[in-house]
Length: 511
Ligand SMILES: Cc1cc2nc3c(=O)[nH]c(=O)nc-3n(C[C@H](O)[C@H](O)[C@H](O)COP(=O)(O)OP(=O)(O)OC[C@H]3O[C@@H](n4cnc5c(N)ncnc54)[C@H](O)[C@@H]3O)c2cc1C
Image (tube, rainbow, N blue to C red; front, top):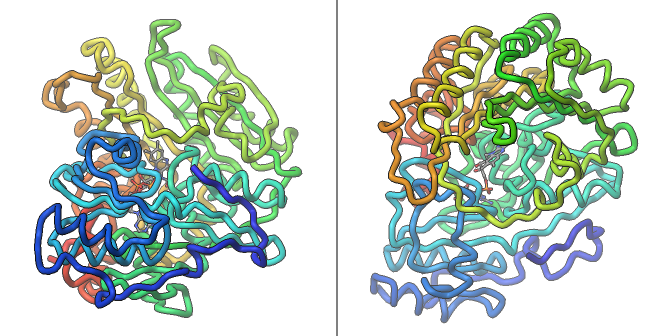
């Protein structure tokens, strides 16, 4: 993957940001009224820029650009347009629509949604070339291409002494996450990723390019931040960035607890949050998994504090006090090297190598406004029982995101179309079925939906609340966007995507 990190604005290369080419429906050799793959391919090959590529099944580029982090429920394509610039994106949309081919825009390919498999024989518009990060340190902003992964943001900001609330996964798309919300470390200080979004350069479904910001198309700006997969292609986006504390380092504390300690752990988390909340610079992430070395289920807890070691040790004292961990490890880490080090990873560079793995994992998630200790303990023991009864499921895991939420909750409830700002955490599950197995949810006693229901019922919310990025795909629109936001979103969808072209990934239902 070609990278260009940290270019000063003045020397921006031939640029995805400026749209070096233009195309209109009239200038594109459309599919000539024909439908089907041949007319699509002819249209693309005669109109795309020379920097782009068209791949067909069997080409190595096709396999490279379509493999997903998660191949469960994945869509299938017969053609890939690996686009190089704005012109190519426009051409691809025009060729797809004129040949009546369903299409999906993709970037780092970490998205997941059950139901996606209904997209068959489609065109993938792969935007991996939109990978620039341009930092304007004086203005405390960065402009990134629509397919930039988290790790590139970290690497670009670190030399400038800046940081940003990135996710705890290096290879997830920054814009892809922001279009849903962007839950990450530092959100207690700076809010959701999309709370820092200043503006986006958006190609609408009709291929017109507009700026979307608080000043320009403000209603669309509201909808883009929460339901942003519905309105076109974000070519690039400009975000606010922040001065990094502690010379760009963070305190990292890893704990591994035996299953018998989960009650003490969740009680400690509950009490800390109920009595004043986590300190704003702190984020705790958990992982309950089967530890094959000791042949037992354990709970890993990773706590990252954006500040000095002394402050960090004080902030995690409530976890240290539990005192029953099997092991722990405290280190002070450069901010952009956290993901290589968390969870006892000991500076493992493989973490930052973004080669989508093709796991077969079924994802679920629930947002909660309180930690119900009994429910979390019950959930943990049910997960452990699953490992015993169905050993083939032992690559599965469940993870909790307990990042401080002061800056998230301080924004008005309707600030963006993401509705769950009061959540103190998100519980997620990844049910990983072995390669080649035909095991289904029904075969494992529908544990996934039962565990989701268990946490949702005790979450101090009005029914199931789900963050779109952690959702399964079977949730109602109200559980994703709330009933209060739906009509506004429907109006936007009717206005900007009346033909429903961008409706394969978490579409806003029109009724
Ligand atoms: C291992 C893992 C860890 C995760 N961790 C976090 C986390 O810590 N915090 C968090 O908030 N989320 C997290 N997520 C969820 C993640 O935010 C979503 O899956 C997100 O959709 C991934 O975006 P992507 O660009 O990587 O994926 P892709 O599969 O490339 O994109 C998914 C879809 O989003 C849309 N899309 C992507 N980019 C654009 C664009 N530029 N313009 C218009 N539409 C676009 C397209 O419809 C695309 O098909 C995680 C997911 C995984 C698999």
